[in-house]
Length: 90
Image (cartoon, rainbow, N blue to C red; front, side):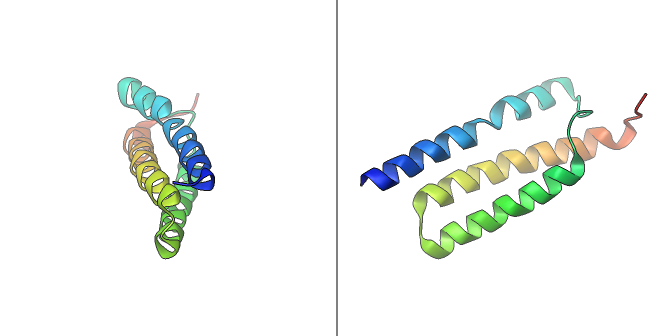
């Protein structure tokens, strides 16, 4: 593995794990009041596009990071959609 790939894996690891605290908190509390469904919809579609781009280039840091991020962001999106159905702003 060369230095460029190492940098890619470091960046991918940091950006990917940044989603885990939000996913865990949302799963635990079911509080989705601060999560924008529109933003997460667009973001999740963007992550899917990055994944497709990584696959097209066979860029493993991009593929691995975006595959994991797609799973986690889809989970957050689903929780926002599911738990936010009955949300009534004060």
